[in-house]
Image (cartoon, rainbow, N blue to C red):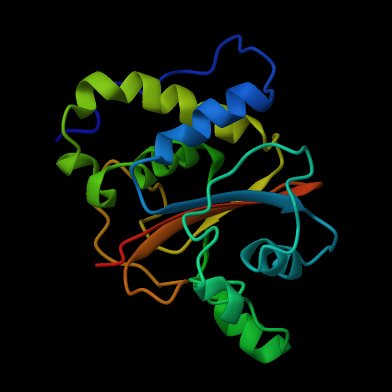
Amino acid sequence: MDSETEPDRQDGPQLPLDAATWAAAVEMYRNRYSFVAVGPRAHEDWLPDVAAVMRREVADPRGWSGRDPEQGDEELEEDPAFPFRVPPTDETVAAEWRSRLFEIPRSAVVRLLVMLATDAMDVSRQYGFAERRPSMEERAQAILSRFPEGSQFFTNTRHGDHPDFYERVTGCWPMTQYSWDFGLIAVSREEVGLIWSLDAS
């Protein structure tokens, strides 16, 4: 699939993001094993805030919905962060954890969010992608709009200096107990977001 044959949906006048728009955007992940949650940013170093989201210790600051495929699962009684590998508190070990993340430009985020919602996290294997692409990109833009200019974005795969996530990603540094997962950590001044898709096979 040639990812350059059609430009991404461009930003234009958008309705203000609200709970309903956010919920509709998050529904893009309903057919995937995906975790979507946002928590408050309470620290300059945001790793503890990410850990709190992974452990399900914090609620969405706006009271909006997310997605948690493990909700109600007995596994969470033993490990509230399942299936994530939580950032450690030890600074040396935390540095190793952080080294698995790579900052990406804002311009790459929409395609990453779309890729995370596709079959096998591979755009080329998504049936009917050409027809679904506009609506998927619109939902991805809605998710991105929650994190204003100046936010930082990180993922767990190195995909070049100008990443295009419509091209097949061939490797990752797993951040969960599974061997194949991809995701986005979005960090604004007030919030941290975690959008993560996993392959549990």
